[in-house]
Amino acid sequence: MRSALAIAAPIGLYIFTAVNPLPAQMQNNTEKQMTCNNHGHRVDRMAHCEIREQSFPSVGRLTVEGHNGAITVKGRLRNDVLVRARVEATAGTQAAADSLASRVSIDISGGMVRSAGPEIQDDDQSSWSVSYEVFAPQATDLSVKTHNGGLVISDVRGQIRFEGHNGAVDLKRVTGDIAGNTHNGGIQIEMVGPVSDGRQLEASTHNGSITVAMPANYSAHVKAETSSGHIQSDFPMSMNGEHRPRQLDTNIGSGGPLMHLTTHNGQVALKRTGL
Image (tube, rainbow, N blue to C red):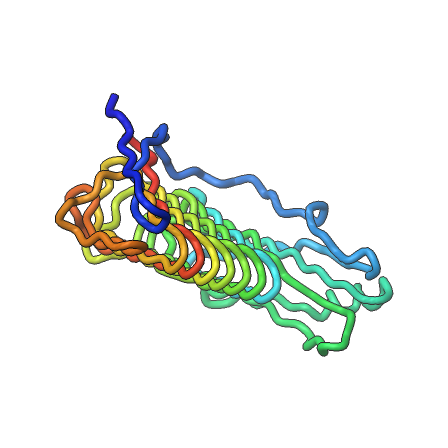
């Protein structure tokens, strides 16, 4: 067994560590997990919660846009798309909460999923939100945007674009051309296969760490930057690369497509998941 290599360095330099690698494989997601039992609301407000479901044939691409609420997209071995939307509303009375929820609409057309609802004034104690649990074919080009809420994508291959503002991003068992950012929240990405020639992996956040897990035989050209934190790698790195405090520009494996990772407040970690 190869021994671990640790480079003693001040915070902000590079560390190579050993892990117990576990191979990752795509999963066929069939279980519906989102319910109205696992949501929260203010104790001083009356609340309404309901689950709406709709399915439609896949067109090979899917866009999901949310404002207040989490978004989860799961790959499965079917050719249709199932959208489960949890609509929540709070107000001073139960009748007002019920009425507010009834005015929230879910628009599904042309491979796009988005919600619309009444405009809430700043001094209004009412609120509404929509969270999504979406099941899509594993081979799907995906674009996901959310403003307030976490974002999870699992078991999808293709062109994946993500954008968040307040919330963490977790990509599990994905592969393809991947790029996106969030402002407040960490980013975790688990790759199940190599990035094809001409494709990329690009991720950035302002407040949060970035962790990318890859098979042991993964090859890429890595550029990583952090303004406050350190860079950690389970992979031996080319000594021909450029190593500076809180910056990395080098190859892992035999090099290849660009992997560009940037954070302002947080660390960058490259993890190994396969032998």
